[in-house]
Length: 383
Ligand SMILES: *Cc1c(COP(=O)(O)O)cnc(C)c1O
Image 1: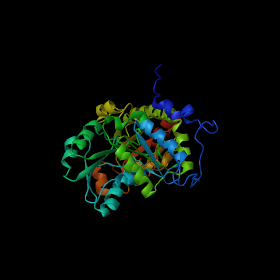
Image 2: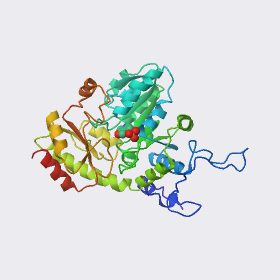
Image 3: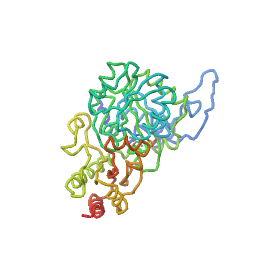
Image 4: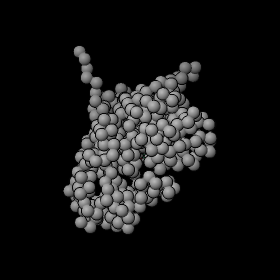
């Protein structure tokens, strides 16, 4: 009899896939050991030292790999630790082509840290495959993409970029934080490496900082595993358990948050105080069709521009339902101000050139009632 392969929603829950063989407990136990006794020192057992491998971390890494449709997953202490490990695949003299409107911390790692080790980066408009192509050099070894991007939700055609990069012998990396594997599986579109800030939707409760890498190719898996152990930015056993616990409700959270985001985006687009709404679920959003062809939903993050710093600060001071904070993807709505928060690491001229102006607000929609959120936003907007 053919058994149906569990869909990601079912796999997220854990359930029978995570029953502990030793005790029957539902869920993987937290193995808080740094080291493991070796019965036969000539033949090390499956676990030796927690930096190299830990049963709790292994359980969440297996889950991450299955959700992204890869062969190997790696859990890190933060999204930036995951990013650091992936950038460390490069050698001195290599060149990276990166999307222009990248997470601020990734931009900083490339321009202020990896640049010191002789790795150069060119930032290109990834929404235009020709512009991306023009940024390539003979030594380009990696393309770093985010789609939809942060905070303007720009859409990049993943199939086209991954295929172009592959022909030129470069790896394609996608930061899939905004979409999660429930909406977008880059490895299935030809991408080589998926990176996550698991701090956001995967963890989902604003109580964890974590990162993830997933790959399909066995050689690449070996290299990332080597770097995870060599550089040491691992996720702790306790936080690995917390991440798996968060992922159990990913589908329910994401579905509900996305539905509310869709409704708020529509209402904000009609509001006279709002100059522009950025959300891939709006039909006139640039790249909405490309997005729909590679992802199964628009997500739960939207941005809107009020035209001035004064108006943006006014709303940030007036809202009472969303938290005003950095980060996103939690059960609580978070309103943030990219100009001074997530994108402060980018030089002001670069921010302005991208369209990240002082009137822009980013809303990560949580699980609150849509009418409570709207009433609060409408009041704060002065409507
Ligand atoms: C937050 C974030 C990161 C960085 O992750 P940390 O967990 O904060 O280190 C990377 N990429 C995106 C898109 C993010 O939102």
